[in-house]
Length: 365
Image 1 (tube, rainbow, N blue to C red):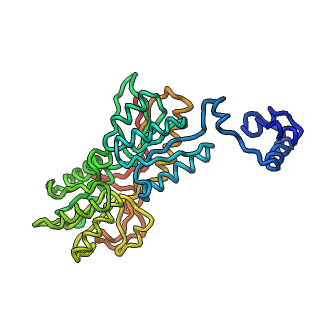
Image 2 (cartoon, one colour; image 1 turned 120 degrees about the vertical axis):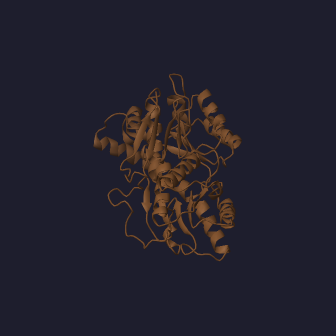
Image 3 (spheres, helix red, strand yellow; image 1 turned 30 degrees about the vertical axis):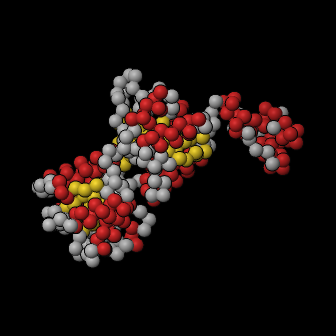
């Protein structure tokens, strides 16, 4: 910085104000400093700055299955928003293992990230305990965790898409097409997303006057191979389902493999609606009818919540739920539509027929 100051003919303090944007500087002075920075190849020493400010301007992101297109888009949303606010990312994959989850969170914490964004595992007790004990500012995304409420409760903000009502909408749509045996390939047990989609499935059946048959509810553990096995079990029933809802994109791929291996077709032999609309969903034949989650927005909102928490550590905890969109194509057995089923909002309607139009936010004490 002293070299830059000498080259630009200004004080070291002025160089600091230009680089850190901590005080207005005359345009020609700013230009002289930036020209000197470019000429000398100066870069900020982030480690030295963090010793002074106790901030590293970095965020830890712990998300399993980063290769999953859904989480990849979330990551893109987190990264774009973090960079926009001058933060870098340190990324780790907990592999849906509670013990490994705690370990990667510990490693991120040891690298002194300013805060963390985590997609919790199905057993987040140790995660919550670690973050609480070390008072780590954190936001949970995608999976909503039940945390104690009260004055002394940990303050974790959370953001995720609606899960129950969009699934209800899928079941309602299939029932409206005349299907009476509708199966569900649910995700990994213990995840809030799995619970919510099962709840939505059962609500959809009830709203359509259909009985719940436990044989039509199987778990694909949120993975393609397990989704294929679960779908095969459904198709092997004495009276198999005529329609199927798959609860994430990986299990949709598995379900399609199971259907194909039996020489069956979609939607001729089995109508299909899926949760998650991924980049190549419209390349299948027929194209996939799907619920699209606002994945990039989930990532961006997670950063917003974390920065708010860093700025105001004692603020009340907030849970933000974002609406989904129903993308109406042909795998459900309908003639493909040019737009979403709900023309007014584009969001999946629940049993009442009303659609979400905006995200809603819940504040805890």
